[in-house]
Image (cartoon, rainbow, N blue to C red; front, side):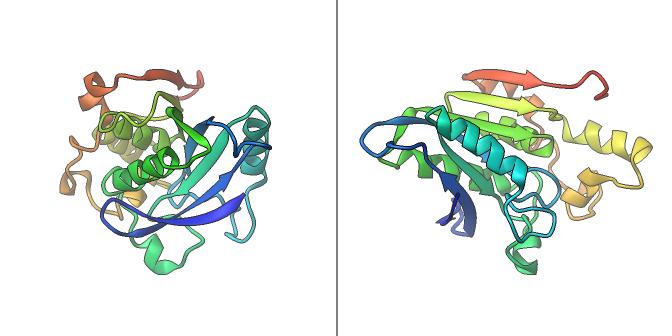
Amino acid sequence: MKKIKLKSLDGLKIYGHISYPQNCKNKKNPAILFISGGIHGSAYDKDGKEYDPLHISIFDYFNKKGYVTLILDKRGSKGYGKKYLSYLDCCGDEVKDIIAGGKYLQNLNSVDKNKIAIHGTSRSATLAALVLSRTNIFSAGILASGFYDLYKQYKYEEKYRKEIFPTKQSINNKRIEEIPYKERSPINFAKNIKCSLLIVHGTDDN
């Protein structure tokens, strides 16, 4: 993987990591944009020093299948210092980062701009769904273990996951009523999503 820097739609410098299939330069290849997951997700491992082995395996698999892969470390991701962490903004300005990543792929000579997919897991699946409701860059979406109503997720965690409360952490420990949660809940904009979707959940995921 190669680390890249690009500008979000609001001008903030953001980071990604791109990898290519062999012999891809003379043809247009399909691409997948992955969004780093978790509260302070990153392409890096838990210490923020080396690449996560799981990510390496996933991208190696898709590269061998002929896909260009880009994982975007949206604002709030670890591995880039405290200031970058402080920009954490669950389903807010993060949307601008992901759309910027999609535009980056569109402009690569080695990418078929009509064959770009987006993939998110957990909170990043929520973000991916919101992105899909606001742009037509992506021709397909893979949403794994996401939640699509920010208010309901917050209230569920408030009752059952207080010791961790990841959604509250991802909105910088604000109360859910302090943010525009309706605008940040993709369930309210589902009719705007026109591309094909694969939605994946485990049977134990209430």
